[in-house]
Amino acid sequence: MNLDKLMQKRHFLTSLAVAAALCSPSAWSQEKFKIGLILPMTGPFASTGKQIEAAAKLYMAQNGDTVAGKKVELIVKDDTSAPDVTKRIAQELVVNDKVSVLAGFGLTPLALATAPIATQSKTPLVVMAAATSSITEASPFIIRTSFTLPQAAVGLADWAPKNNIKKVVTLVSDYGPGIDAEKYFKDRFTFNGGQVIDTLRVPMRNPDFAPFLQKVRDAKPDAVYVFVPSGAGAALMKQFAERGLDKAGIRLIGTGDVTDDDILNGMGEVAMGVITSHHYSASHNSPLNKKFVEAFSKANAGLRPNFMAVGGYDGMRVIYEAAKATKGVGGQALLDAMKGQVFESPRGPVFIDAQTRDVVHNIYIRKVERVGGQLYNQEFETIKDVKDPGKSR
Ligand code: PHB
Image (cartoon, rainbow, N blue to C red; front, top):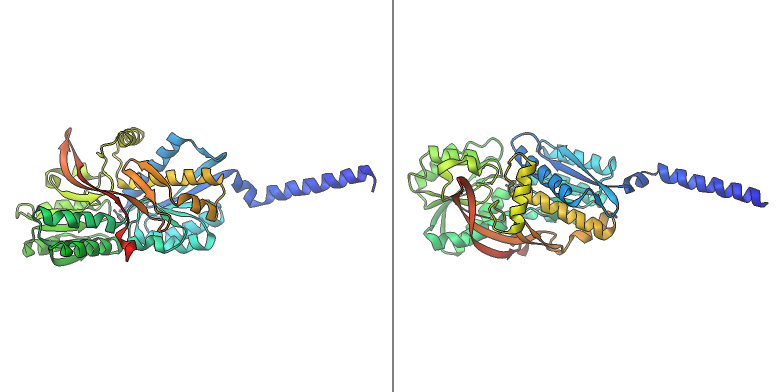
C-alpha cells in the first residue's frame, strides 16, 4: 500500500471512530453530570418538594453548576407522591436521560418503590426526605442525608420521664416512619420507667385527627406523643386545641416533624412550649446555619427552610463532593465516594456512615418559643452523633 492510500485509510478509520463516538449516548452524557430529582411537587406533600427543590438550587447557586469539568444538570420531576409514578420516572431518568444520580424521595413508599431501579442500574440513589429506618437496606445503592425516625424518637423517650411525663398515649401516622416512631419511643420510654397506655395509628392520607384526639383526652395521659409527616402538623395542632386537650393539661410532645419550620409560625399560641426532638431547627445557633437560612429565605420570597430543605442541601453536597472525587464517573465509584463523607451542615456535624450508608448527626431537644415575634423550635439539649438505632438490631 502506498503512502497516499495509507493516509486515506487512516483518515477513514479516524472519521469512523469519531462518528461512532458522537453517536454513542455515553459521549453525550459525558458532557453533563445529570441529577434526577424526583419530588412531590403537587398534592398534600408539595411543601416537601418545594423545600428540597429550593435547597438544591441554592446549593448550585452557591457552589457553581459545573463539577469535575462537567455541567451539572438538575432534572426536577413531580411524582405527585404516587409510588408507581416515582418508579416510572426513575426508570425514564436512568434509561433515557442517563442520570448519574437519582435523588429526592419525599415519602418512604416512594423511596422503597424505586430501590430496585437503583440496584439494577447501579445508580446511586440519595434519599433527601424519607425517614423509615429500613430504607437504606432496600438497595446497596441507597445513601441517606435526611434522618431516621428511631434517631429522633429515642432522645425524647430519654428526656420525657425525667421531666414529669410518665404516662403517654402515642399517636402516629399509620405507615413506615410512624411505626418506627411508635416502636422506638415506646421501647425506650418503657425501659426508662414510663408507661405507654395506648398506641393509636391514624391513616396517612387525608387524616381526621379528631376521633383519635378524643380518645387521647379520655385516657388522660400526661402527654400525647405524635408523629405526622411534614406538612400535616398544622391540622393536628388545630384539632388538638379545638378538642381542648391543652386546657385539659395534656402536653403534646413528638418528633420535630409536627412543628416543621415551614408551618410552625402559622400555628399560633397552641404550639407554644411544645417539646420535640429532631436534627434540624431553622434557629440552630451556628454561623453556617445563619448564612443558610438567610440565603434560602432571600432566594425564596422569605420562605423559612425546614428539615426537608437541609436534607436536600446536604444531599447536593454529598453528590458534588463524590462527583469531584470520581471526576464525574458514576455508578459504584460514585457511590463509594459518597460513603464516609464528614462535613458541617446547617444542622451541625454530619457523617455518612460507610457501613450503613445512613446519616449520623446530633439530635436536639427543642421547645417552641417566640423569638423576635416569630415561633421557633429553640434547641436546649444536644445528643451528639446519633447513629440510627434501627441498624443495631
Ligand atoms: C417518610 O415518609 O419517610 C417521611 C415523610 C415526612 C416526614 C418524615 C418521614 O416528616
